[in-house]
Image 1 (cartoon, rainbow, N blue to C red):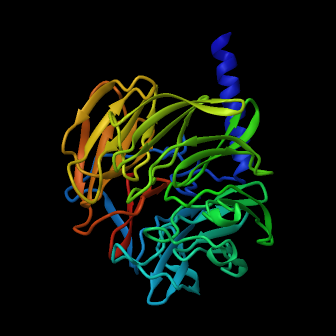
Image 2: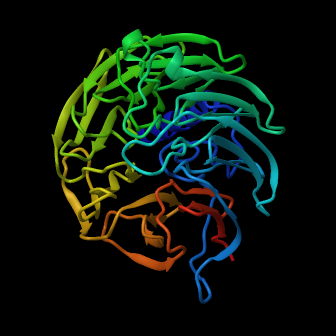
Length: 416
């Protein structure tokens, strides 16, 4: 009986999530980290690792400009967001052939200060036949998915006196019903998080003296009420998505040359947070008017920007940084911090869970397929897909894997 109740509640949560984020088609990867922003593909997705010599088949590839924004996918359309010279380009591509459907370009004023890459970081969000892109200089645009026509644009850094941060704007927006929610970072104007009307771009609400981060928000429910969670520069906040009303604020992060880059992971009524730069990880409980820390530490995980994947009662993530030092692949219990297994020196990577398989896209260009299990590390296959660095998050749709390195966007099939 209890199991049936739990299954029913889970089904209701999944239905509510689909309603919150707009209509989703099977196989869509319409936002950062997929259908539910957790790196887990739709339940009907499958892959094959029975490759011939040379690994999975390359279906198409396309030269690209600067930036590290991963693609999003809706139906047969792939949305690429990159920079060419002084403009950020939004490009719609045919998923099967890679042929261009339409292209739209916007001027950008962003100048890289720390790293040489001056392109956009944010994965486009697709909802209700609209494409939302958030450029490095804080320019927010809404386009028609079918035609590329611009519905509206906002200059959030100018409107809300927000800073560019270390690498430009980098928190991918999220759509809730008719609202676009953005970690703008306008702390001087109590506009840390701003909600824009999806149809018009008009400001609906703003809240918080929170600085921007590179973590992207996630939607969940708490006691049947919607809740959106933002990890900002130094605070993790829970807000009602329709009103911006604050449910909790929890200190996470630190001043100085640090970055919060991984998304929060919601597991039941708990949150898992992680960041590198000596910050580590926190396991916290969501309560009616606060977030209570239960456990924290530098181990088992301090990830620079990779969001760990939820597998059973465990998480699998990358402990370390992409820009220096060793990185380990580790599986652990987030509630206790107990490690189940650790692959030392594995290297930095991003991950997607497809069924019982884990697609691990390493920044050095290798794709690793492993069993998604807490029992032990079980590698099934490994192949090099590129000799160029892969920092953009991969996407997966209808058996197709999309990776973006520093030179090209590539589409592979992982089905026979």
